[in-house]
Structures are given as structure tokens and as C-alpha cells.
Image (spheres, each protein chain N blue to C red):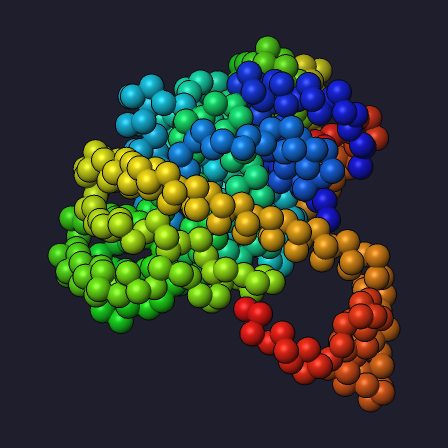
Length: 141
Length: 363
């Protein structure tokens, strides 16, 4: 009778006001059977990490179109580490140049998906990530 | 599923009691996933003496429940209370997925260490809460929340689990919520200890106010006579009906008018919530009867769930159903005959209805 749902926070950090992409991906995640916490626009890294911890999510998925991805991802990774929540996986999507994606991945960010990606790609990625991480650790309970 | 060691569970319980947010959050996950570790944890966290006041906020979709929760939280924080919020949104019956969006309207409490907000997906439960919402509130209670706010999914006319879970139930309506016939319907309208007409600056607020007042008026005359709830409840064995009755007879149900988005009427609402709490706690006999009722009903629900799942698995019912569908298709047996056969296989003592006629008046 126990179920271990994939819980994922879809967050829009920063100042850009375009949340269409975030809503499309949140809906696709829901249709994939995930529990999606959506917190709306203009989230600070502190708000995102706070929500991620209270909601005990497996993954934080950021949608960033503003160009501030390097600082925002870095800050969120730092805060998660500070609060002992480095096991929460961080991934994202938006308009992010290829060379930045390489740097972000080195920092510890998971996959980054650009415009035009089929929604099945992040979903498959998340399922694979879940299987692999379940092998490493006992997970949520 | 990794099994958890006893010391690991004890350690988590200890951290929950100390208010460690990561621990509270993890505890709620264990509880809502209904894992064996979650059950052991609940056993550790349980306190025979309730310390939190549980307030249920329910009402139709879009009536402003999240905004009201957020505004109440603001007022409670101003008094220095620790607030826990459990906000439920529906799971898709098709995919099991959910979009949990209640935090959007609760942004102003993000980062406040005195507020813990957790979104829960209903996960197949149809009563307006998730199966484990009340149990999750035990973790918040253990962590020191003096006030716990439950926000139900947007409800229609019959999602009433909130009455069981909450000490005080607030039913949020809007001027468009309905005409005289709607407010007379059984179920939801009987649930409110306090009625809120939110967005009351809109047209129709006065009319709704009149209709609810009239309904309260009519209810008052009958109230004394129906103190013992009948068994129109959840259909559990010897269900006693929902846990109302004894305590509410003395409570004069109130109507509050609010425009939550602008914070209007919120002081009045909180004062009414406080008045209801004082009322139900003022009479020790009534209060303990109410606790007893809740305990009784929670025990039944838990037992039902565990027994159902246990028997389902132990009886290999999935396989039997697969097999039975084939037999029905081939015309070998009727669906009714099949159910009878399966139940008899599972419970050899069970006899077809009628034989136990002497016990028919059980409920």
C-alpha cells in the first residue's frame, strides 16, 4: 500500500515574467504521474530552497529565461548544501547557452533542457534519475 | 523499499520534536507514503493530549481558501503563534499526478521560521483531504505548532472528512455560491461551524447572507433534537456518523463577511474561530466526547485501510479478479455470484446476507 511518488518543485526564479514554459512543463510532469509543486513567478533562491525543503521534493526544476542562470543556479545549490539538503536534485530549462550548460553541469546541476525540447525528454530523464538514485540510497522512506 | 532501523526512526522523531524543518518534512513524507517507518514514527510522535488547535478551511474551488489561510496565518503570526499548514489539492484519477499550487497564494510566509507549509496531493481519497492529512498534522503538532490549518481541495456538496480532522470548520463561500436550494442541501452546509462569505463586495453577498442566516435559524430549532448523529456517515462498520452533535448544540453558528485579498473581515473571522475553540473547550465533558469520537473514527478508518490492503494482497484478489473477468465473459458466472464466491473464499465464516437477520439492526 505504500507509494513513493516523485515530488518535484517547478520554480520560476528571478525577474522574468514568462511562465508559459513552466506551466507547460508542470502540466506534462503531472500527466507523467508526478506530484508537482508550483509556486508561481518571481521566486528568490531562498524561497525556492525553503519550499523545496518543506515539500520534501526529490527534484527542483528551474525555468529561467532571464539570462541570470549562472548566479541563480549557483545560489540555489549553495543554499541546499547549507541546509543539509544537497540530496535534492537540481535541473532546469530555459534559454541557456551551450557553454553555460557545461559549466552548470560541472557545478552539480543535472540536465538542462532548451526551447523546443519534447516534454518526454525531461520526464524520461527524471525517471532514469530516480531509478539510479534509488539504487544509491533508500530515498524518502 | 528500504526498511528503517528503530534508532533511525527515534532519531527522526526527536528532530521533529525539536522543530528541525528538514526532519518535519521528511516525517510527513514517510507518513503520507504510508510506509511501515511512517507508522512507527506516528507511534512515537503520538501525544494523548492534543496541543494544537486544528482549523479546517473548506469550500468550493476558487472561493479563496488559500488566501484566507494566508491571511489567518498573518494574524496568528502577529500573535507569535507557530502555524502549520497542510494544503490539499486533487490527484489526477487517471495518472496519479497532481499540481499543487496552494503555495502561490502563501508567498508572504515563505522564509518565516514560524510557518510550515506542506502541500499534499489527495492520492485517491475523495473526502476533500488526503488519506494521511490528519496523520501528517500529528508531526506538526509534535513540532510545536499551536495552530494547524487544513485547506481542503475545492469541494462540492459531500466532501466532509474535514469535520473529522478539524476542531473548527470554516466553510468559505462566495456570493455566486448558490440560491436558496443550494444552501438547504445536506452535507457541506451542515459542516460549517463558521460560514465565510468571501469576496463579499460582489453582488449577491447580502442575499447569500440572508439565506445562510435563515438556514442557521431553521437548524437551531431542530438542533437539540438531533444531538445523536445517525449513521449517514462513511459506511464503516458501526459508523457513528460524522463527529458532530454533542458539542455543537451550544455553538451559535456564525457568518463572517470577508474580502480576503484585501485582508478585510479577517480579524472578525479569527475572533469567531477563537470563540468556537473556547466554546468547545469550555465544557470538559463535551471536549473529551469530541476527542473520543475522533479517535474512534480514526481507528476505524486506519483499521479498514490496513485490513483491506492486507486481505486484498493476502487473498491474491488481483489474480482472482483477472480470472473472474474471463469467467463472466464466457457466461460461466454473474458478477454478483463471483463476488459472493470470492468473499466466501476469503472469509469462510461469511454467510450470505439474511442468515444473520438477527443482527440487521446493528447500524
